[in-house]
Image (cartoon, rainbow, N blue to C red; front, side, top):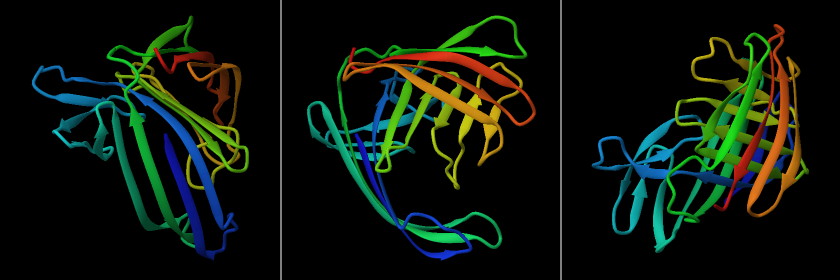
Amino acid sequence: MINTDRKRHDMVNVQMPAQESSSALQVLVIRTNSLGIGYEVASCSGGFNSLTISKDHLSSTQFVGNRTGRNRISTSYSGSRQVSLSRLASYQEDVEQTVEFRRVSDSVNPFGTWKLNWSDTEGDSSVGVTCAVIENRNDDRQAVVVAAADGSRMQLTDYIPVDSYTAFIVQAGHDDGIVNLLTYGSQNYTISSQSDQALSYTYNATSSDGLSIAGNVSLKLIP
């Protein structure tokens, strides 16, 4: 579980909520690397990153965590950054984040299936999900992310973020992708089934140049 609080100030030519919080469930795979001599952790940007595990700590480019129990990892972060939206618009953001992971399975296989049907490709394809995020914000808005070992990735929101994508969809082996910002393009997803153990949703998106995609995602959050 990832809990994030953001406080914004010193806004220049932009109007943003002064405070925002979110709670996100992230599920990912940790496994032995292909060489069999170390570990790697799935990234929700796609693929895997190297992971170092010691008696008390875990460390990767994604996070540095403390082993707080046999099956638990925790970490926290606080810091400030300047977000530049253009040459004339920016704001300062203070971020506080706490993260706790809990091992729910010994399996290192994908825990979900992501199906894709591109408008420029005949037939469906599917990939196994190795990292997923379901983020709920304090304003009842939501974002979902899935990623696969081959680098495929999809991010969808039901709101318009000013500093991120409304839709970002790329698939390994497919030439083009969908990158929607602000009001360019369209996207939608509908959750069809949700519980503590599983989540399923359908989705569709269209880029500003007409490329479209539709499909569904089925996740087993606790195998």
